[in-house]
Length: 216
Image (spheres, helix red, strand yellow):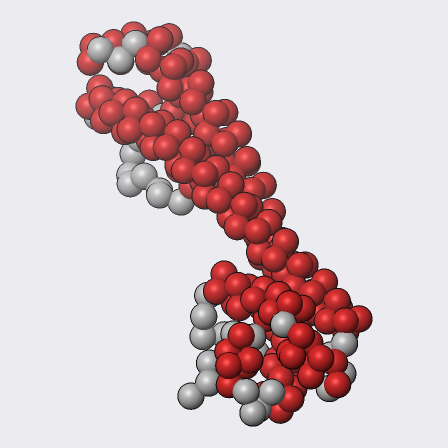
């Protein structure tokens, strides 16, 4: 069934169709004569409930994924801001010491690809914190070992938050797949239901509108 409305609007249309078919005797009696008795309607209603549940679950998972990404992104930006400042200072301190600059991975441009970026950041703090001579030279621009340690602590935090985000993203994608399958089933069922309703109730536009069908 081609969808020209949102999934939420579609679900509401289907809900109204089931509710009014059950509550309006003229609709239920006529549709039963065309094969849509209570048992058949129950099958469709079950498919609707599955789609409703899948839609709600997908929305929840999507919200959780967005929240997890926001938390991860903010922590990554915190580390990126601190590292950028530390990198600038180190580049000045070791601008005539290419060996140390290479060891700290501060030469050339900084990759923005997450994995490469994080490895560059990790190498900088790992090397700096393991070398007291480097630490001593960095203090000239007020970059202390405590500053380096505080920044280094953020790395595993960023990694943990990214892992949490990827978990939520995967769950969201799975929920989307389940929702799409559920909608395909109820859409198919409702498509035939509406086609039959247009025949069964063709003389009553009011009843067709009660099922959510727009009559021109």
